[in-house]
Length: 355
Ligand code: NAD
Ligand code: TYD
Image (cartoon, rainbow, N blue to C red; front, side, top):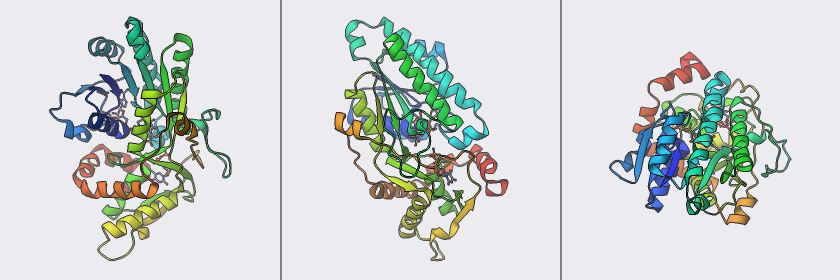
């Protein structure tokens, strides 16, 4: 089996669902079920013996040692993290604890477990660390996209904590010979995306008749990838990536935030028009910019494409349409995840009257 951490979050749950749709190899899913973890994402696996869920933290050394000894995974895929930049600005502590200390504890546990394996199992074992393009910092308008050798220049507590975890993973390869792989992916979107991030937040607010908040001038650029394409890239790197290597993952879809929001409004106008006939664009509202807001991210994915033959299946246009449809078809999922503590977050970030 494989051990997946953070498999109840946005990308992790998509990964687990896709993995078990394509393979009978069981998944041991370790997730702390923070506000971002949601077992409802995995409801379709209820009663499926191939999915073993454990509620716990990657920072729990005893639990990790026990799980690894008991289940003997042949690979670990580490998604577990605090992942929202704005939350890292309000409170960096959890990011340090999970992304740095947690990754360190996981590496330590895996190092000890790896030492117990027979030669043939050691040969096959992999530790894949899922990271982000945000570790590379912000690009000037005309600068080439981030390659794997771009220097690390993280600008937010989130990206700094992910950068630190990447460095630890690298060090465990060079120092202890742990067979690691690292992927640095651009912004994801798709099903089960928590509505604190731009795309699901805009869909949710649009349908609720609330403002669509654009930070600053809305001309910041992100490089968008449909989540299932990220999952297929991780499967490919896990299967064939060269040990110790880093692979950038992206779909060559650079878009300014305002353009993304316009696309969402246009899709919603078509698929679920407002009762008054106006476009959802009338709900767009400019709000204060994010402190230290990175201006542009762009991923050069040629290494992954040329070395491992990976290609995304979705374009920005097909992926966005699927995403909007998914949210329209799953109002109960949205209602469940936006109750309770979600309101506290919206109040803190956008003002009490917006909660
Ligand atoms: P998410 O916030 O939706 O999910 C994170 C998951 O990790 C949740 O299920 C949460 O409960 C779990 N978790 C948090 N702390 C934990 C701990 N201490 N132990 C075990 N589980 C814990 O995040 P996501 O968007 O799915 O991102 C997954 C990974 O991919 C992260 O490492 C993130 O840095 C990386 N990534 C995300 C994006 C993106 O656009 N979302 C892009 C590139 C890379
Ligand atoms: P986000 O989805 O938080 O991802 P990240 O910060 O990791 O790239 O934000 C994507 C972009 O959208 C980013 O430039 C910030 C911007 N943004 C807004 O303009 N308004 C919002 O309400 C949010 C959540 C994000």
